[in-house]
Length: 218
Image (cartoon, rainbow, N blue to C red; front, side):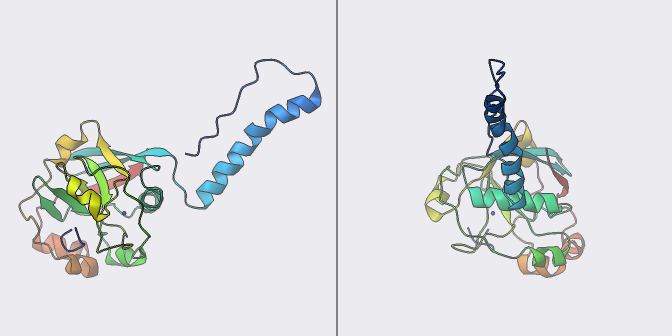
């Protein structure tokens, strides 16, 4: 798929089973608990996402919740985490819907925001298959992932060998909502026009498109 056809470290503190009266042993026992926040803070500062986290898309069709697994595709998960935190997907339209194939989105409502995040990240190895419900970056070839995503509507395992690395999946009743997203305009919206004009273009030409009201990390 191209853009046209068409991205925790949990340090478990060991609780002491015995009360240690020796002060130097107490200090050693407490050291891991003191280091954990520092490591988490450093990871957050570097833009690293938690090992697993959920994002709720409040859409015009209802809520869609996705669970992200950083181990599946670390670079993609980290980038998605930062995009959601920035509000990138708020008001973004589902501009490409191909039944039994994909629902695609990820061009911002404001073209200036799309331009700001148009900085490709390098690819992740494909560890998970493109099964129904998985969340994946759309690309224009190797190492071109930016902000566009798609949700697999069916088993698209053929994409595995093409370098498309899922990094999350829709959970709960989310797929029932995904399947109801408006598909009447199929692939008609022009991505170049969305990139340069944002929602001004889509609202004028394709007013029936469903969209994300707000995306939040849970």
